[in-house]
Image (cartoon, rainbow, N blue to C red; front, side, top):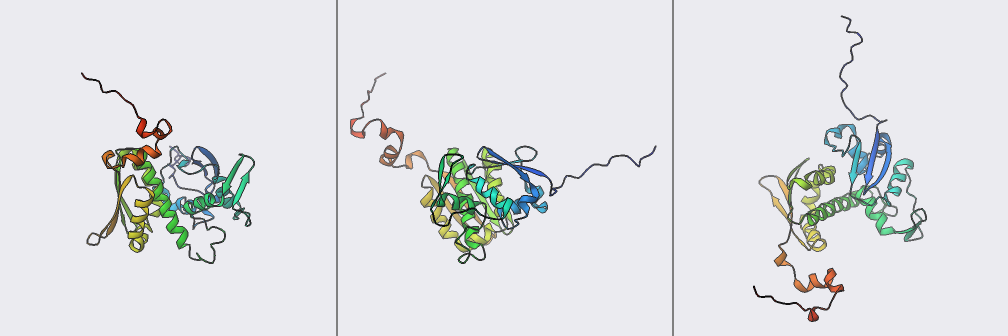
Length: 262
């Protein structure tokens, strides 16, 4: 039998002409892998490098979901395609007539930070990209915290070692946590080694409904971030009433209810 034309199994690798679908908060963008990897120092540029192929977790064959703002991502995508950031320097807002939206400079900065793209105006301050890297790490922790809050009984523990992450997390948010935090596998430990106390304070201040801790384990060589929703009894009753929908119905002093005896 002539085996010269026998097809050999094709090893699946990332190629520059692969099409990638980025699902950003439900809004889908299609691009080439090479468009993203042309900017290797950014989150997506690093994520889609061939060496990181085994770390990717597509929702479909070539689709990747990010829980970010799908409308603002249009400006992120423009950077990857052109290498430029289209930003009016003399204004704090951009009017997006196609969506009838006014996008604030701060909203854009947060998305640039998450995707680790240098923000205009920070070039002299952040020549090494360290500020953007730390802010991107905090944005990733914010995103994980929000997923923990949505799943009331969820808890998460993430151990940051040098070049390695280990997770102890409820199954329903494990894949999301990995997708969000895995890009920081190489730098998470280094950031925590310098700013562990500050990051712990940041999480406590910005996610007050969580019990958050940053624990250093010097003998075992890792930092651990723990997040879990507080027990309902720990919440201040007046604060819950003030900021929940209950406050829109009736004043606290005028609440009327009936006790019924069995």
